[in-house]
Length: 317
Image (cartoon, rainbow, N blue to C red; front, top):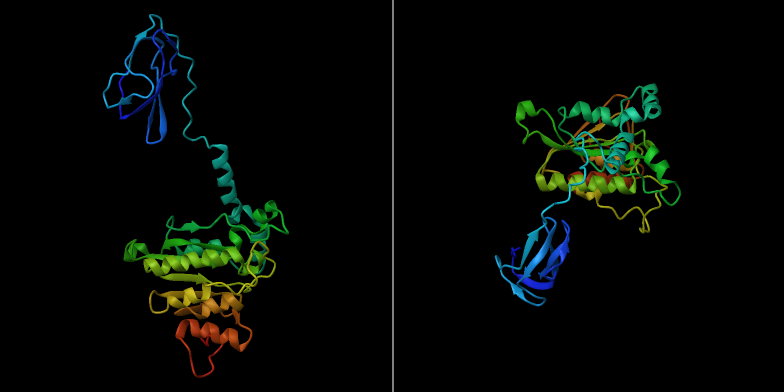
């Protein structure tokens, strides 16, 4: 048995020691870590050439082993693992992802159907090229653990009410690189598409990626604005967020497209109004309360004004 690296000897089995396969023969210390050199087979130590405290070099002879004449039979090895078998921890992750999909939420989807509307995930799937969308933050739930159970939050607040990710749009025409964009959709089936603590953080992350990677942004903005009831925070108020300024920084840097169908109010409308292009269905209701809110949203996309801003950058919407 020879040393494979430089180190110092911590211990060594003495001459005449009987060893089973895997028993330690020499323990070396290197880089403040101990490395055990095990017996490769059943054997007896016939000679030792180093002792505790000796310094080794690569290739130095440490000990000599005399193999037993009769080697023990190897234990029956387990059958080859099935590559299709899913470990319990991975199965839990897969199930968590599944619970956020439309097929796992038939009642929520049915409510959307009765209202004549589509789900957030349907919109994202139809916008992006098949298989191109990579979701960010799918396992996030509403920040309400102080008043609701985790099981309740997983079941009823998937993705904290916002689907976010990166996908391609019309890659066949423009190539996969030029077609990549950030896609965000508030989910009206989750707390009326309101803006919660963690979906604000998800939005901030996506807008930062859009700014850094120069990616266009598509925003489905249906929702009720700021959400009361989030408890899992040390913040005094819900005003210490950078989402709206982050959206404003994209103005003139990357294209931004906002889409509104149904009700779009307050913070959701502020982000919508900051977009370069606003697409709204005829039944869309876009609203923002108070001059300060309206002026703040308008300033985020156009800069300060001397005249009173309009409630929406696209009056026809």
